[in-house]
Length: 271
Image: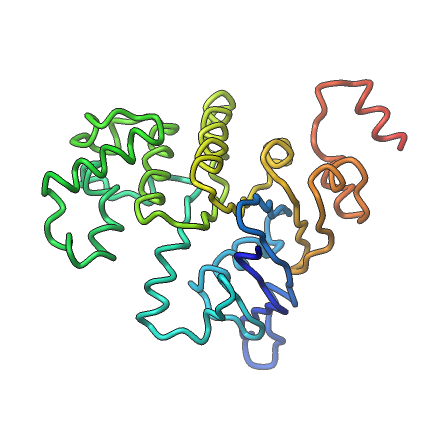
C-alpha cells in the first residue's frame, strides 16, 4: 500500500527583475510504500531539503501534488491538515537546535501532545501525561526518570533519542529523518540506527531517510532515490543502486566514498 506519493512536484523561487526563477525541485514523482524506508541522497544543493519541506507541506509547491494516504494535501481544510500532521513527523539533524534549552525533557516530549490534543492543553504536568512521556522515553532507550532534566545535561546521542521520542508522541505513520545521525560519533550512529530499525519493526513506521552518508543509507534503506539539480536521476532497490548503478552521477557519488578494503576499491574503479 502506498502511503506517500509525489506527482510532478516542482518548486520555483522567483529571481530578481530580469532574471530567471531558480528551480529547486523539478518534476519529482515517486511513491513510498507503507512500512518501507526510502532514502533520499545527493550532494548539497541537489534539492533534498526543499523536497522534504514540500512533502511535509511546510512549503507550497509551484506545481504538482503531494498525496498522503491517497489524499492531496493541497486540498485539505486547515482542520484536516492539522489532523494529517499528527501522522507525519520529522527528526532533524541537530536535536539540540530543535529544543528549547529552558524546557525540561518532560515538556519537550509532551509538546506535540499539548499542541494537538485539547484534552491535555495547558495541563502538561498532570500525572497521566508524565507517565505517557516516561513510556516514550523508555521506548527509545532512556529511563523515565530523566524527565526533569534539561537538554544540556545529555549527550548528542541521548538528545537525538529525545527527539525521536517527541516525534513518536502522536503515533505517526511517517517519519522524515533529515540527516538524523550525521552529527553523531560513529559508534553512537550505529546505536541510533539500530533503535530506528527496532521502532520501525515494532510500530510499522514508514521512513523517508535523507542523508549524504552512503554507508548509512546502504545499511538502512529498502530503496534509494538519487537527486541532482532538483530531479530524481535514479531510483531503485538499495542493492541495485549500490551494486549496479545505472546513472553516471550515482556512480560518481559511490566512487567518492572511501572504501576500507583496497582490493574492493580497485575492483570498483576497474569496473
